[in-house]
Amino acid sequence: MALVTLRAPLADLAGGNRRLELPGRTVGETLGALERSWPRTRGWILDEHGAVRRHVNVFLNGERVDATASVRDTDMLHVLPSITGGI
Amino acid sequence: MPELLVGTRKGLFVLRGNGPGDFDLAVRAFAGTTVEYAMRDRRSGRYFASVTSGFYGPRLMHTMDPADGWEQADGIGFPQDDDVSLERIWVVRQGEAPEQLWAGSDPAALWESNDGGLRWTRNDALWQQRIDGDWQPGLGGLALHSICTWPGEPQNLAIAVSAAGVWLTDDGGATWRTGYAGLVPEYMPEESRADTNVLCVHNMHRAAARPQRLFMQFHGGVYRSDDAGSTWIDIREGLPTGAFGFPLVVDPANPDSAFVIPMTGAEDRTVPGGALAVYATGDAGATWTTRAQGLPPSDAYVTILRQAFDGHGQGDDMSLWFGATSGEVFGSLDAGRSWFTVAPRLAPVTSVRVA
Image 1 (spheres, chains in turn orange, cyan):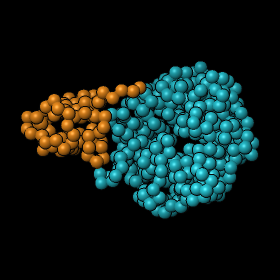
Image 2 (spheres, rainbow over the protein chains, first blue to last red):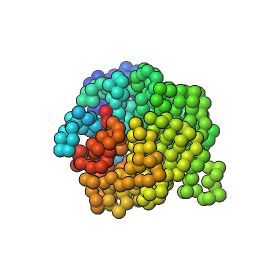
Image 3 (cartoon, one colour):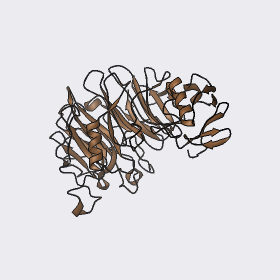
Image 4 (cartoon, rainbow over the protein chains, first blue to last red):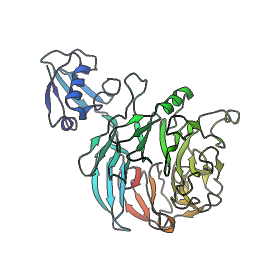
């Protein structure tokens, strides 16, 4: 299973867990597993179409990826808000 | 004690107080996130907030205590195989049936809850009208922003969409018909006006004491309907700058009484001449009078957004409350005859509702 790292507010929605081991063959499946385990995260990272939201970045072993990227056991997945600015 | 729910670009502010100089900031929630709209269901006491995170998207949250315990409502979102995504929830409104609430979104869809607002379903009959009619968005998106219930009649509803006009149902949303007659879209070429469905309604409210009557702030002009929204009468005479604007309040007890805050036309969208003023009618729009005592008389180049004006009570003692994009919130306890500052420096205000 991949190790998924979350920050606030996502970690708060996942029961305070900043690191979770989750199953899945792709980023989308892994984040879907997050939503099933912690329903309050539903819709925060993935939109209605299963795509990673435009202003959320998912890094797989340090490389920014989309929901279709393949995931293997022992992979590291970081979910971070993008650095899009504005006020 | 009045409780004001003020949605802003930087969260929800709950203000409590009794009058001038007496309001305190009781709660701030969703810090840093846009709260498009917040209201309280007065039957259950449950609070609702439409929250749009720049990172994590839009959602409807609810709680019994605005200081804590916000949870996400279920069901407001489009199916995975639809070609659209939820952009924003514009309005939440108490229904007339027990535990019934309505919500409107961008893209323009009507949502219904019958369990007090925890779970929602889309009205598919109106959604199909959107698809068949190829509805076009206004500057703020394709927004279903106004939902007018009919007191005591849950089957009867009028909704308004920017920019797809007025839609009416008398069977609880199973079927819909337009309420276009009389509206003049001056932003269209004359030869295109008769057949267009691009009707940019900015706001619409029903006169509860005479439910056949509705008031409307249009893209240019203010209108009244005396036949439940089927046909519309132009009542802009006496208002400044072509009567462009967004905010609208109707006295629930007096169907002849309504309030608007006009703005300079679509290219500017600020208060005319920088003089902040509410305009009131007591004769169903035949005449309008300025009610500005206590409001900035000059250099107030602010915008009052469509959901940022609300009233409570009725008649001469009706309280009125509005917030500006400058972050100021103003209040009146005498139907607009005098005004005071409730909060001088919040974030840009998106909505104001009396809890």
